[in-house]
Image (tube, rainbow, N blue to C red; front, side, top):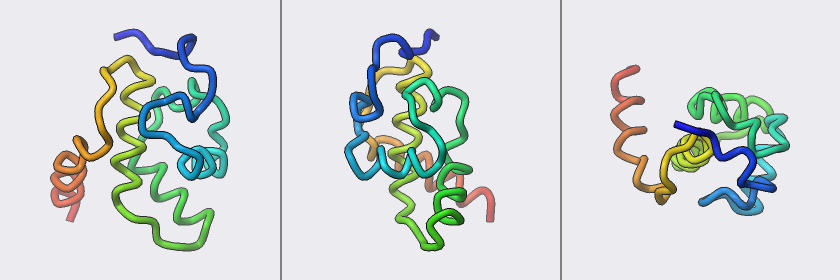
Length: 94
C-alpha cells in the first residue's frame, strides 16, 4: 500500500481531521500529514492525555486510527467505522 504523503498538503486535508484534531496532533509533535505514517493511534491517545493532563474521549482513538490508516494508503473511512475495532482491542488488553 502506498502512503498518501504527497497528496495531502496539511493535516485538515486528511478525512476526519478538523481543527481540534489538528491541534491535538500538533500537541503530539505531528505537524505534517506524513508524520502520521507508522504512528500507533493508541499510544497517540495516551500521550495526548499525558500532555494535556486530562482524559480524552476514546473516540479520539477512532479518529487517530482513521487518519493514520488513510495516510498509510487505506481508503478513507468515517472515524466511527473504527469504533468496534478500538473497543475489541481495548477489551483484549484488560
